[in-house]
Length: 98
Image 1 (cartoon, helix red, strand yellow):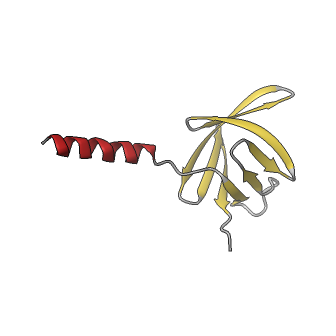
Image 2 (cartoon, helix red, strand yellow):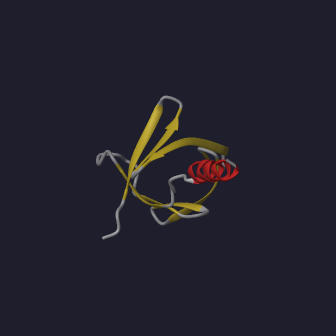
């Protein structure tokens, strides 16, 4: 019984730790979008060769700019990344390496 409980706890821990990574190259789903392809690294979002430092807490990204801190909620499912700010959302598709 003790082994079953330990195994169950380990499985719950592994499932809860598995979170899809936002790191990678992302293209706007809407090809007519004014927003360019972006590359997300461990500490920067790179758009048009300009790195923008960010901090990630939970499902929110925080960016500092001249107007202060901006927050963007996001959700990720497989190769789709959606940023949500109020009623507006922007959808990106992960660029697969060939």
